[in-house]
Length: 423
Ligand code: PMP
Image (cartoon, rainbow, N blue to C red):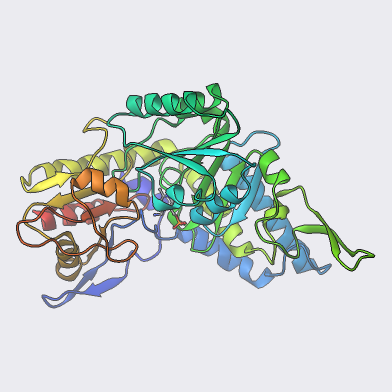
């Protein structure tokens, strides 16, 4: 039902781009997994608020107080969107990467971390200062749960532990068995953080129902602008940790000691980890996006997206040279994120041609998930740069892949143009 698409218009739908073949065409943004276009609604909400802009938690002035209210209301809206438990904290961060680094900095002493090698680097790398166990790529959701259970049962010594797992892969789009992984973690005395960067824009996320301890996501993938993210969940580890950043806003009381040093009492609330003037526009726009998605109804969004996924997968299946990348197989539930390689083609050239000849924006490369790409492609990516990849020599296996991704606001025409272009 394209009316779902019409009910959530996004920015940039009228943007035209030049084609190398001459003329121009409306841009087909099919790289939502990197950054989704902002919702018109978010833009309108921010524009309506902009004249009332004021610094948060600082001033006695009316606009300052108004901004503080909006900021704290945004926290409540996000807590509702995520179906948080009583007592959970919502910390505004810069991004998913920032949220997971914050949690990594707040781990209790001797915490062991368990993470699948298939994770995005944002979930894979922040734990370097803890003891990390990297788990092998599973070939089914069931195997993921069994692998985790075995690793947790074997852990020595038995102490605090954290599992970090993605809700939906930024490469395959496949859903991970979050509820089962959370149950396994808890059964073995571990906690779990959900990387919902790719899940939250496409599916409802209930912290209470999934029984995850924390969840992280980014505004710019959830139809809000860049620069803001969320870490939400249990307050205890966050409250007991040193502030992520030291500075104003995080401290309740600061006093010189008689010996010349400084004593600090930090806040116990989310403010503890939000030192500095907070990104009120970022928080407000995330809350606006959460409200818009909730109002549109995830059932409608999911149904619409599944229809688009089917269209793309059916179209790609008609091209014998195309291989869709998957860990869990064709029947796995997934979001609108599909990566593939085309035999005989360098993925970067292919993606460049989609852009230059058809006005289609997709992503090529290794998607900041090098170990996963290595598993999926069966070749050593040997990357140049963080997310890019070198060209495969003629006859060599593809060293990188192409990713198409979409969501709210994607019209049929964009995915149809994409499938025709690939053909
Ligand atoms: N996790 C996943 C699964 C992602 O797809 C991404 C972004 N590609 C991130 C984390 C990091 O998000 P950000 O760049 O907004 O910090």
